[in-house]
Image (cartoon, rainbow, N blue to C red; front, side):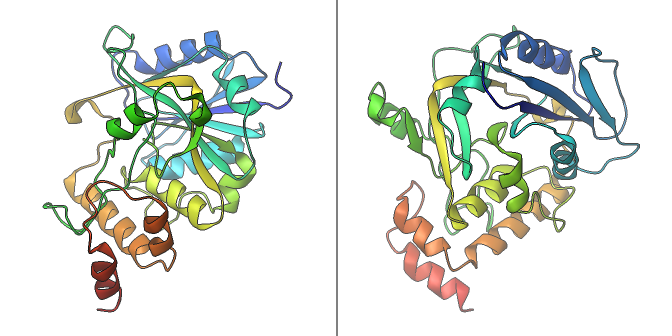
Length: 284
């Protein structure tokens, strides 16, 4: 039994197909340490949940980031395990993550994709995610969502020296960190409360820049159900998403520590002359 409580926090908005109920049932079955489950409904509709689930019901939209801030504030555990409302976890994932954890880390378990039968889509998985280059994105100055890095995952497959390893970024649908560290980083900032995008960037880059680490723990896993845009309850429109992309890219690309980060992690999509482009952009 782990010695510290894990607070599973689940932001939810208009989740379809009983996904939220399945997520809660999966956590209740597979979490083996002391834990609590807290769900935040970002506005109606609401649904009834088991008595062991704590619930926050916002009367109107406040946005996924504000919902997560509130869930984290209500958590009584040392650790936060944030999950989307359509995820599953491996057996004892909460205890496995605690066993190899530092207080200034953000940890992502090995990432799988769920199918509609709530099983792994296949054996493909992702251990590493990278930050895309805003200078080379044809759709504008932004950090493109995703960043799945199958080449890096395959390169270090089955090398147990890297069971716990640095990753530049995470997917965002599932992450594990201490509650104290979340608030040391400021939670999610107020300049982007409604933006349903770039959640892992706000956390991951701020933690790297603050001297912490972002790591993958390959000893356990979680799985995320991929949804089409029309099925996503948190989809608040293209204009809202583009605003978030713009805020985040401009915020971090102007940070003096971005050059250090890019030197530390050579990543796909960044051209050989990224340093010159960055300096030029920062001074214009």
